[in-house]
Image (cartoon, rainbow, N blue to C red; front, side, top):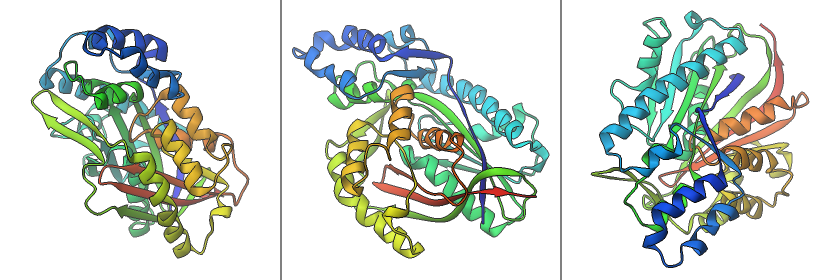
Length: 356
């Protein structure tokens, strides 16, 4: 069985209290809305206390073009990603020469060659590592990266695979977009990076972690307008359907039940619910759909409060928090994230000790 040996996170340099962000947004949007104070309540109601950004707040006060924003995305992603990869290898006590594949996940910027190639050059990685960049998965990307690493390690049982997720969502901010979707996105989105090492059954590693037992990918037909980006002259404009919480509430449980039935499992067997915290209403919808108490979603709420919604890395932040609690041997978890498509990624996991 594939095995998640380590998960590390790396925060951008600028941390801001949510109240600081509100001040900037009020100054930028205030004259365009007669009810700006009512609209700004979303910042307080979202249960986000602080977030990390790749740039200081003053950077967002000026209109920035796509070229400038994307160049900053590349530079900061290479910096953050290099640090996250280095920390992950150190924690797992693995040399870069031992890595077989590198899965890179991002949706908040564009680069060709992709960011993973630039990081490999920065860190002097071996030339023959298999690169697997994944773009456009949005908030589902972290769970999808773990799922694809699981698949790879089933095919190559002695493999060691890096999964690196980086999103700099703040850099997509649209200074001149006065839509409520942009305002809501500004209240939620943040920046971060996370790196996981996933190994095959025959790989020589030691330590405690989660064994991945099965995965499921689901695409809701004809749901492209639920979530994603509109690509325009000024860059990436967020697409958010107001129906997302209702969709989750009605769609998640049947989808989860189908997955668990294939594994011979039931909801009651989930000891750890490791879910991407898309926002307060999304977490509320998880609880209502699956009948979970708030204690079950506490790790997701904690990450949301301290980091906001970082898109693809966020679920790995939640996974790191759960792993740091050192679950008992045999405890089981469901890792899940929802993203554009509208789509779902799920991974069933079991805690254990791996001996080389």
